[in-house]
Image (cartoon, rainbow, N blue to C red):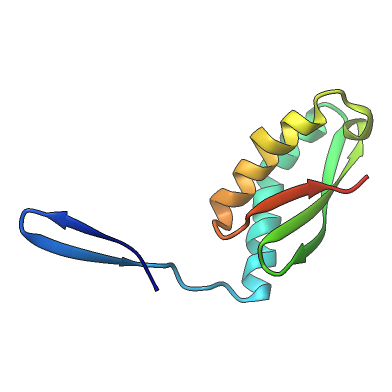
Length: 99
C-alpha cells in the first residue's frame, strides 16, 4: 500500500509503507525503545517493563519502583515512553500503563 506520492522536479517518487515487522521484530524494537528510556527512569528510582503488545498496534507497559507513585508518570508515559516506542515501531498507535 502506498503512503503518498511526492512530486519533485517533474519526477514522481512513490514512497511505500515500511516492511511490516514480525511479532519478534516488533517486540525487539519495543524493548530497544524501553532500554533507551530506562536510564532516565532508573535515575529517579523507577523502571519500566513491557507487559504486552496487542494486535501489533497497542502496547501495555508497567511502571515500577518510584514511577508507580509519581505524580507526573502520565506525562512521562506520553512525552517519553510513547514517543520513544513510536520512534522504534511507528505502527504502534497507543501505549498504556498497567498499574
